[in-house]
Image (cartoon, rainbow, N blue to C red; front, side, top):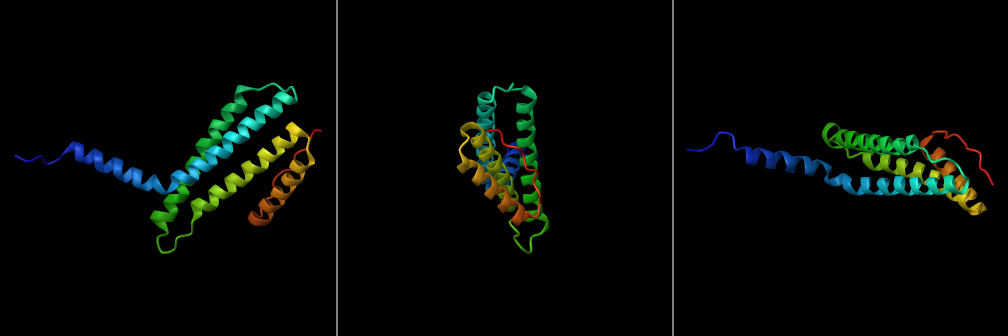
Amino acid sequence: MSKIFDLDKIWAYCITGTLSFFEPLWLLMLWFFIFVAVDMITGISAAIKERQLIESNKLRKTIYKLFMYCTVIVLVHAIDTEMITVVNLGLARICAAIICGIELYSILENCYRITGNDVFRILTQFTLKKIEDNTGAKLPKRKHKK
């Protein structure tokens, strides 16, 4: 007698389907995980150099930020693959590039705080200008301590 519902096959189909949806995103997510991790490490290093207190709520914000980034990338990928199927807009790549660009801006700021080297200040300003020119968004300028 054959089974009407084979739970092993159902689970296999569910897992395979889920993995196939996320497969194109793994490299994008890996890159912004790297950018966020480097931002966190350089931020902690800058705080130590400036003798600032490292607070757990700031580390918690990094976890929330990662979760929100992942959520946005997955939802935008869903729009790309499931809703707008006529044209591949590449929205997930665009969002990931914006996320990584903003994280790069923060990394360069932290490098300037750590070293005081003007190269990082110039790169920070250049990155800020590129982000603003390409997105139309105005990021708040932060004061640099020397």
